[in-house]
Length: 526
Image 1 (tube, rainbow, N blue to C red):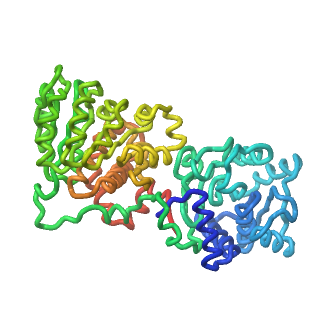
Image 2 (cartoon, helix red, strand yellow; image 1 turned 30 degrees about the horizontal axis):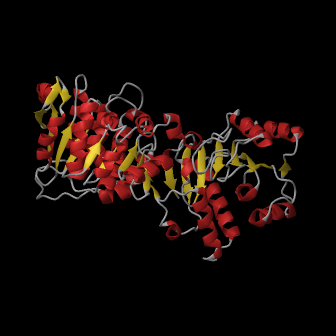
Image 3 (tube, one colour; image 1 turned 90 degrees about the horizontal axis):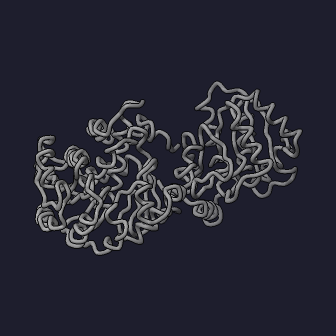
């Protein structure tokens, strides 16, 4: 499913009307129908509503929703911030119809009407938020801010129309203040702001209502939302003739004093996600420790400068081993010092297989990111926001405020697949395309989780999946396994691996994956 910018959504809407001949009034009516269908299915016992409509077509959607709710047998009130006769186009048609049919529209024009609105909220079962749409690009102030505050201060179920009022449709930033919705019914396609930054905290459960805007109009849009069907198509099929050699060989270079756990988890994750053979190369003095903790993984020691620190001279050994492997993951638990930087100078330039660079190896590159351009094979880097902030010289807060665009920009700049970790992980490709992953919740917020992800991506590449799709699949399966961990506190990263097998089984039953998984269920299409 495509994820659209506000400009792309407006263009798709325009083309549907002007080029395909679908009247805008029909699109507005269909959007209202999708919203009312959702409300009646989600709250079948609700009897009284309030609809808050602002200016423009978003407000027009609210006018149509109020009419359809009344037609469905509910009672309630319609409130508008627009003066009589102030709506235009399709919204104006709906306003004219309501006035002609003697449907009362309460106009919010002063303190008295605002107080009346607050009182009205005490007697309704839910509120429909159609105050502001996807085009908000400056801070919400005055009457609109007061209305948002009044709604957020009530313990009242809220259904937002297209986007919670006050959320930026492109970045997800809260523009001063924003509605905190229980559910958001967005139209045609998810908007970027619904899946990024602060927006994800305001959306509640996200539903996508199809309104007759054809998918073909947005095929060239660069951002996708991952779903089970896409991932299932990416994963290579297995038959009865497979053997450990045909399922891919992974080489993991990792570990330093106190960080052997990261190396072990990355290697085990690669093995448990389907690779036939996994080799773990660690500093020589740490090899006995790694070997004692691993049974199925083949371990070996690398030259050291000091005990536990890999020497740059180990590059020759790593490259010789990589010739007989299908992917090379480097970084989990590695010391991020100058010796690792010198090691990477040799490995990146000469690696015969795709690279996954994470953790200590990424830190070692922070002043040498141009090295990535010398790679002869595809490279996947997997920073969390703090790591990416250090790589590009801005704060982690700034990274989070514009996750999608920053990931896309630097994937293109460095010529890599850039996987930016965090809620709704972003996978950006060197050509400007990107995907947002909807799986993954609190169970992944623990030490070692990123090491598991590195192993997953390395495994999928070794099994024959190209780098970008391996990163997409790794993020999706990592999140799905984490979501299957029983809720609550007290989980460790190793527990996530125990759910790999169940996650793969669930994926194979893709219809179940959409509805069993609590995080996937947050984005539904109807």
